[in-house]
Length: 148
Image (cartoon, rainbow, N blue to C red; front, top):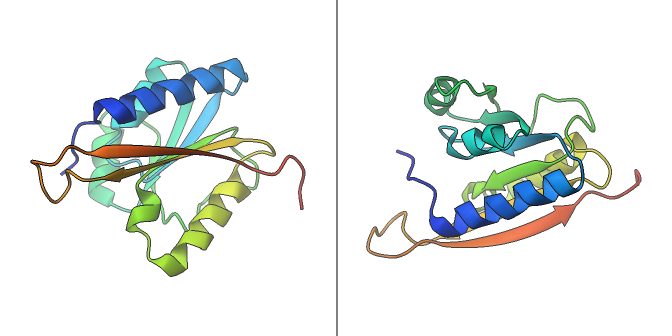
């Protein structure tokens, strides 16, 4: 079951959307889209949204919100190099085994354009103990400006 986005995450997503608009970036890939709660906000802001999630159930629920979401593994994204002008992911790295983190990051860099912002939101608390307030840590990465 997906929990509603917490206020800290909402604020981070809002700042990221503002950054995308300021830089003239018109599309975003969300990795681990869940049920599409963030995707709806990107679409409302006028950002073309594409999502992937490993769960068929989540993809079905996100599609019910009229979102373009596909079943895919974050370590092997079904997109050509440089397809997206930005990327957004929440907790993907927390749920990836340590040996997979490099593969997920490589894929995020591969499918985004040179210089693209990649927002990584890491959440802690609240999932296993509802009495704890979730904390959201926001990390903004950039793909290299030119191919290496």
